[in-house]
Image 1: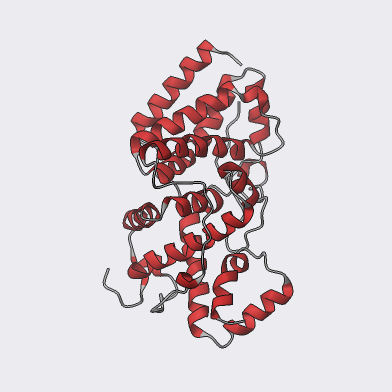
Image 2: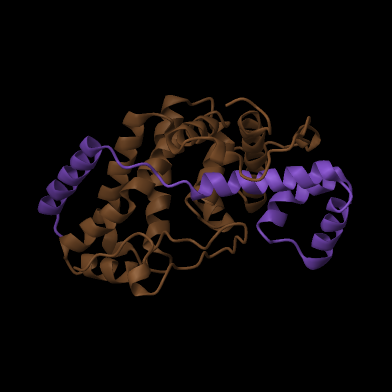
Length: 223
Length: 79
């Protein structure tokens, strides 16, 4: 089986997102030949399935790590997600991307472990969320490229920290929607919550992350 | 539209999901509100930075355990 990189460039460039997100470049997650690998794997080509695993293992580990916040749980959730996707591959109909299907399985595995470890911190309930506390305060300029004030590894640590500190209900929506690139509808389906709840939590997550990054990015702040 | 309205529509705006009339109304507000302009720009930047960051390499022991488990499963249950 011929392999391609994650950008899928060998077969003519990245695929586009199911939901347009003009604030960033189109998704490069699912390579254009993904369906060929899936078809080969379904026909019994284990190397093809291993290629899919190689392609997505880092992204899936980041997903499970971000949701669970615990390395042991993240590894277990990732491993079970890949094993389940292999076991149930014949039932995958191909009406969504394999990557999307895999993300949903991995998110479920991670959420199951999160709920078990922290039963009171994560719920699918949809409380009425007021708007009064959403207005940011003390807004200050960040300058044009605030992230460039930090070395790459330092920046990665900051990003991990701000995501980890996000409230689990908001974090999970943000990870699925913005990082794993599921659509709003797919995120709602994966979490068993409504589309308006996804939108509301996503807004809160984004605002909260902005607020958390603010202390690192304020112009003139010492690094 | 006031500042609260901008915050309420912020996500839809940066995702390009607002209808034209609402988008124009929001941008009219941004034209004279420095604080909201900074919030919009900073939230866009936040999403960009977090979305575009590449996942770190999988630790080699984690990669090895994953592939060992997978091969065991493949032997037990060929597709």
